[in-house]
Length: 333
Image (tube, rainbow, N blue to C red; front, side):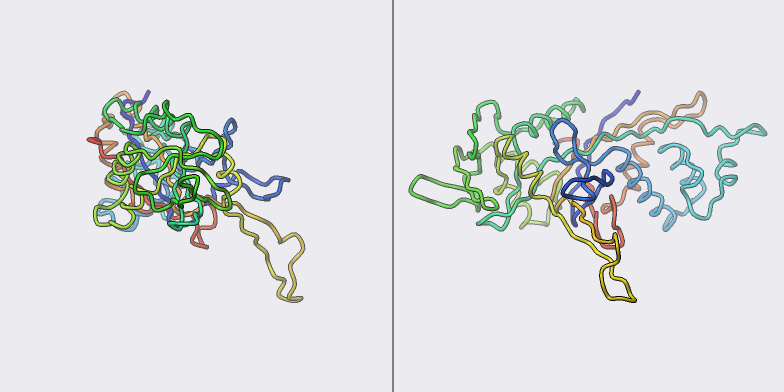
């Protein structure tokens, strides 16, 4: 169905709430998670809607040829008669009318998205402020996803050689996170101590590769941190952190007449922390149309041109939540 696959990185600049609805658990409004791992994710439908909204706003704000671009949005993302302010359903259908016939608006979009997976998760550290943690399960899945593109090579640590016991970790040789003790080097994350079982040069290589692909070339401070402060934890320990170290915020509403909490207005929300790094696969294809269809390269060009460098994903946009940097993976690695 889709002809090309393009990895897109998402770096959280502010906490992000991609909600899964209300629950009766400890957190009233939890974030979306994979069913089989409980790792945080962003559903493809959430992602596609947020990206479409960001591109629509960008085009309405600065496009010199709004009609053509608006038609292109509906061709690329799928027809949605209610998505654009200032354009009625009839206006949009008129753009898709062929001759005097009926408007042909029932077709699949040229763009697809996979669920955004978590790659690096920030955790408070005793030294170095915070660490980006990951695990063998996440790294193996990342490599498998990248290999779907069939044109990129990712150099990551030889995970199969890491037999990490519980509370052991792999760091880089120049990590700013390590604390020396009589038993050796440790990394202290939250209140938990992890013994350093290996210092991997390949992890440095992976950090440099990632920094080159997701960070601006002039952002030297963050590039150095990404090269040195990634920590590989055992799968189970990583799972514990991504379940127990997300941000949980209590919110309330005050009754203006009584000055007290309004009934039913005290609740908790879960957020993916700022500095979390996720990735999704953008799937592109030709337009689904018999004649005069848009070819895949033009679909990709349109998307690359109009995707803003910063978009908003998830809830509480008016509170500054969900601001995310977008960065396509360099096709040359």
